[in-house]
Figure 1 (cartoon, each protein chain N blue to C red):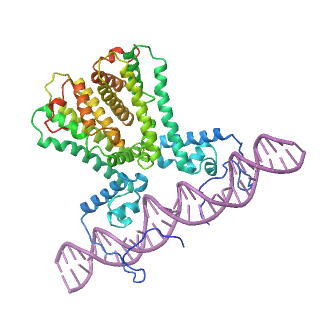
Figure 2 (figure 1 turned 60 degrees about the vertical axis):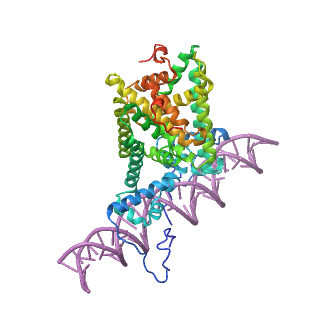
Figure 3 (figure 1 turned 30 degrees about the vertical axis):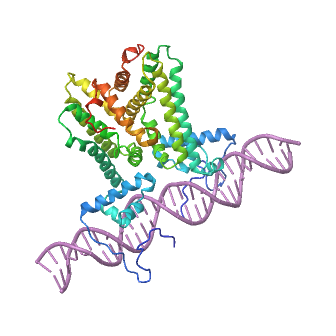
Amino acid sequence: MQAYNYMPCPESSPVTGDRRKFSRQNEDARRSALIDAAIDLVADGGPAKATVRAIAEQAGVTPGLIRHYFSTKEALMRAAYAQVMDGMTEASLAVLATAPDRPEARLALFVAASLRAPVVDGRAMGLWAGFLHQMRQDEEMRAAHEAGYLHYRDLLQGLIAELPRAVVGARLRADAIACNAVIDGLWLEGSALPHAFAVGELEQIGLQAVGAILGLDLAAQMPEKDK
Amino acid sequence: MQAYNYMPCPESSPVTGDRRKFSRQNEDARRSALIDAAIDLVADGGPAKATVRAIAEQAGVTPGLIRHYFSTKEALMRAAYAQVMDGMTEASLAVLATAPDRPEARLALFVAASLRAPVVDGRAMGLWAGFLHQMRQDEEMRAAHEAGYLHYRDLLQGLIAELPRAVVGARLRADAIACNAVIDGLWLEGSALPHAFAVGELEQIGLQAVGAILGLDLAAQMPEKDK
DNA sequence: CATATAATTATACGCTTGCATAATTACCCG
DNA sequence: CGGGTAATTATGCAAGCGTATAATTATATG
């Protein structure tokens, strides 16, 4: 009676009536494929483009499968958000693996890594912004955001605590919040308006600002591979 | 044949069949009423809740009227975004109007005002985030965002330039970017996670951080009405 | 007070959305 | 090699979306 807006199988002709071929996969592979598809679509298209049907097509499956792995579309979006946040934190954290032992150098590398690609990226920001407004309505999503934020900040606070400074506990918390805010703000505008800043400018400004807040010269602590 | 999802007139019974009463208004009043309604809905519900029907109901008219004043729904949303940005910059300027003459005090007041209600507010952030993701697709919106961001930053840079410091021009730009980033980051997280910070904590941290970046004690420069 | 006209409402249409459910089929295990 | 079963597809549905257009009616104007 009315239009049916999902193409069952592009290859099979309607006259033969045979179904689309598929292969079974284990749960983890399918779930992450669906999550990746959702992330891609939100990143360059906004949440509006990430429909159940579009996600399924991007993942190479049919729409019904989404509800087989996620109780609802919102659950899928939550999982996608968590993966994005974790990925950004891990990208910043990865530089510490090969970092020297000096606390100042480790903090400097961490800050700088947070202020250049791939962390600073218009796509990533679009993704983040797309999820941000859902956060205000969805209690679980807000919890996910808070966890991600606090995790990153705790990481930062841990690096700050290692510095050879004599500060009391309350000051440590304030320092971590302030440094985190600088990084967040620079990340945000650097991602939204990439051409408004010169190459390496964000890193340099970030190092200087964080250093000023903590009372040390962070830029001088960077290993000799900055621009 | 199928359901019709807009209630024509709540007061008039279907049997009498009379129309909803209305009064004609001039174009400006109606346009701004529709814009206000759209802003309200986006602010606490995200763009998804700002449907044509919801906007019309909020504005006290019927959905068809929207298309009488705006060629398309997107045109209405653009107008709403512009109004939000204009309102924010005007609010920032209003703080300076009653500020004392001392440059340090003016800057301190400006920073503190940006880090408490009503600037720090979940609704305002929801609004900002809701429009932010549209910015990535709509060239006109991106231009509007850039103009707003640079205008605010120039305002901040002007306040910094008034300080009794001896700095070169390049340093001034970097300082403005860094201070803007701190304010942005604190505003963002304070709005998103209000209960994660104590009362007045954001202002205090912001003043301290901005002061550290600029090399002066801003908190001490605040007039005696901070908590 | 009559009339024109523009503002507003009412209605409808085609499309998309998320979700439920039935039908199929690839793969595991005996 | 032949079921069993769970993964996957196919189909359908009710609701909501933006938009187009026709019908009304409030108001200005003479």
